[in-house]
Length: 158
Image 1 (cartoon, rainbow, N blue to C red):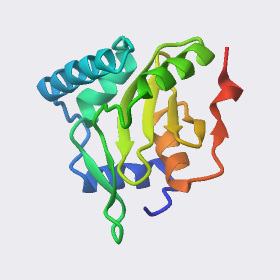
Image 2 (image 1 turned 120 degrees about the horizontal axis):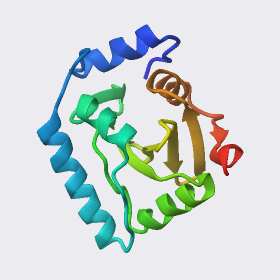
Image 3 (image 1 turned 90 degrees about the vertical axis):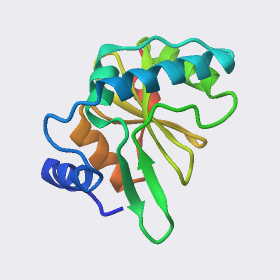
Image 4 (image 1 turned 180 degrees about the horizontal axis):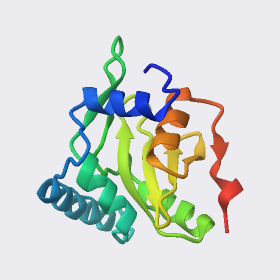
């Protein structure tokens, strides 16, 4: 993945995956939200849909953006549980933040999950820890593309 240094670079990266300003995929977003809610129940957790995450998904759901073309590594803009027991980890992040969170994307290489909280901030749940990405889409995706070191999510705990 090219390092994304500006909001325009983020928009170009997303555009290559099929995004455009004003994109709306309401039916797909609703279906994907229903699926992940069921998956969370099956994993022993519960999850509430939050407005910022649903708004983000309505615009971005279904996009698949290449991170590293040589490896087939992608960011898929689908809400997913990437491993068994993820519901507990998502709940721990929400409890620490004192805010509800909801998954909005994941990467296929590491199985990391991008989540939004109810005030619109982005976080990254990875096997190595919980990380803060940014307060909006552009800053979050620029941080994500830059990679490690990422800021620890605990710096944003309630």
